[in-house]
Length: 111
Length: 110
Image (cartoon, rainbow over all chains, first blue to last red; front, side, top):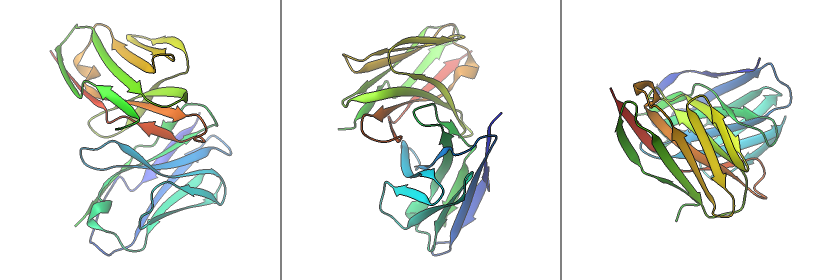
């Protein structure tokens, strides 16, 4: 069966510090991968999605970036965090045109 | 105006009541998803549907493509159903990405 992992589960970082969130999927190959953010009191927002290694589509211009160095690994990064980057970050995977399966999420607080 | 609208935003009901959550969208879609988000934040996919009706246990999801409307029903509601229910659509021509409603917060009182 397929499982999706995210770490860390929670993170408190000062403004201006770098960020690296990791997502890995097990039990599947060549999945579509997604990064979402949920700001406090707001709905889910798609940040990036990837249909293959090295293929990243950005949905929202911001100071975040994503990379997919391996088939089942998706990384969300920032060089300098802003207060507005605080939120709940979710990784998800799917096969094309099928349901999306979400990871447990990372709660990021930028102070 | 959001492409996906949910109603109500908040819903409180007594245990055992029949629950209906509505989702309307204004774009052409290839599929609609219902998701459940528990207080800890984790999200579970409940249904994906493109026509008709699906049932899983006490949960029923329906969609009317012509009216651009979907409903999620919960029969014999239970306190453990308390969660945020999110409607999301896959827009035609929008690749694989989902567009989300803002969610309905459901609280079931024992």
